[in-house]
Length: 270
Ligand SMILES: NC(=O)c1ccc[n+]([C@@H]2O[C@H](COP(=O)([O-])OP(=O)(O)OC[C@H]3O[C@@H](n4cnc5c(N)ncnc54)[C@H](OP(=O)(O)O)[C@@H]3O)[C@@H](O)[C@H]2O)c1
Image 1 (cartoon, rainbow, N blue to C red):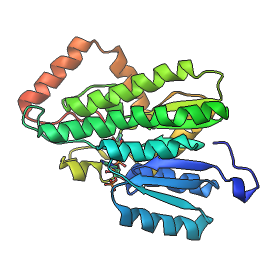
Image 2 (tube, protein in one colour):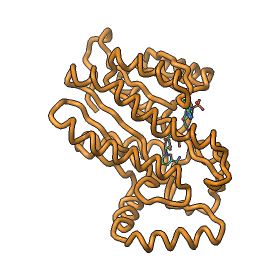
Image 3 (tube, rainbow, N blue to C red):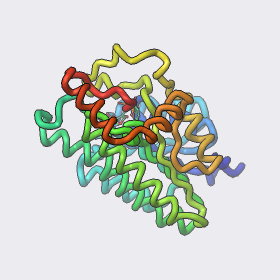
Image 4 (cartoon, rainbow, N blue to C red):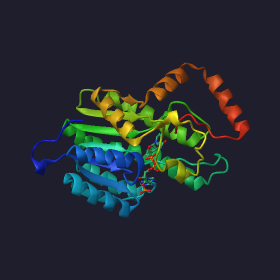
């Protein structure tokens, strides 16, 4: 991560979506600890206020709070407007999973998931890039998932994350030489509020498959420095995704079918 200048009036700014818990809170705290001011974007204003106070006390961070529901057009427009003014870092982190089968899940919820996991990532990246390109300086971290590399039964979540990976990877080629870095971060299971919010029972997941927020943030930033566009934190997930890509798609489909018959959710990393 590039370090800010000594002049405090010119502190760099990181805009983080979904900083009220989990991975987003981890990214916000890490950037604040590196001297960045923050723009916080989520629905829960009270939790953002608590985080802002904590960051001010710890690092003298200035936090702008943008209360916004990224599932709505007006919510995304509000954030896009702020990005147009210029930020050094954008972390498109907000996202959510669902627990039901596709054909029984509320259509409205599925649309909201697409809007938060995909539309917001695309629109906010589009809003941030012109200022980053003009200043030949910028970093965009798009939080995807291992689930976007190895599709499981939760088809809409995996599908949304596959979009984020393909979109970010493609864009990285176009941005070469323009001073803007882009990454698709693909974590496996992280202990956050995601599964609880979705009502997914995770009790059968082996301990070895869990990553910590700090581990994922550190891996993402190290991979950025090394110019890696697709970041897969944790050796267990590097192995899983490498093997997964070698396995024929027909076998993957057969395993998913078997899991369906057993009534379980795909546990390949969310
Ligand atoms: N946990 C995992 O195992 C895992 C694995 C791979 C990838 N990921 C990805 O990591 C990212 C962060 O998730 P997490 O695990 O940290 O989950 P989390 O603890 O549930 O945090 C999700 C964050 O997204 C925000 N958010 C959700 N819906 C929103 C909306 N409509 N508008 C604005 N903000 C919204 C939430 O804020 P408010 O509720 O305050 O709005 C919250 O801050 C997601 O993209 C997720 O898909 C997670």
